[in-house]
Length: 299
Image (cartoon, rainbow, N blue to C red; front, side):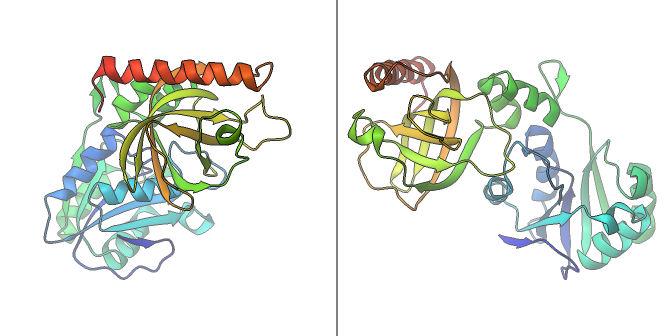
């Protein structure tokens, strides 16, 4: 997948889906599917970067997921002063049609663009007839009686409703990143070695605590138990991170990429009286995870 961050772009004969794509949820995937049938054209996902805004997935995670969904070119356009003051007509003509070579444009029915959000689907329809590009407009996807939206998913994540959030996302909420060295306490003193990941900057996190997880490694897929938080039982100032004990696994993962799906919230993060108490709780957490995956038939 080609990644472009700053224009001018030099693309030709593309099918483009455009939007914020925070989470790449089931509603967003309608737009991606809308360009997926154009196999003879480059499929382009055009999104925007907003500084100092937390996203359901980090930029790196969004790119990873976009590639898995069949995107050929990923454009992350900075929403800077120039873009925010650009008229919708200029954005369409200069960026989407001329620079991105759009033959097909796929958007949601509430898509707005250009200065003051003055451009809408009506403008795109009129331009489509004049400039000769195909336009696909998709209604909001509904699940459980309400539209699927990033706001709704954010609320579920904040409430620890990780399973419900995954249903709207189209797959379990995940953390994707490189395994780094930790303090080795889990391995040496708790007899439960963990794979540690730094949490990506700008990523919206669920409540700190323990989760039943499914882990994708270069060696295959495994079940695990993941703690997200600052490890309050361990002395010192600990940066927020994710550490996962992978069941029936003992290979070296340092420096490799780990894809950790969170399937169920087990308990909140808390401070224990010492390492012995923490060890016993970790054993109980592991057993609860084993039962969860067995009950739900998740391989």
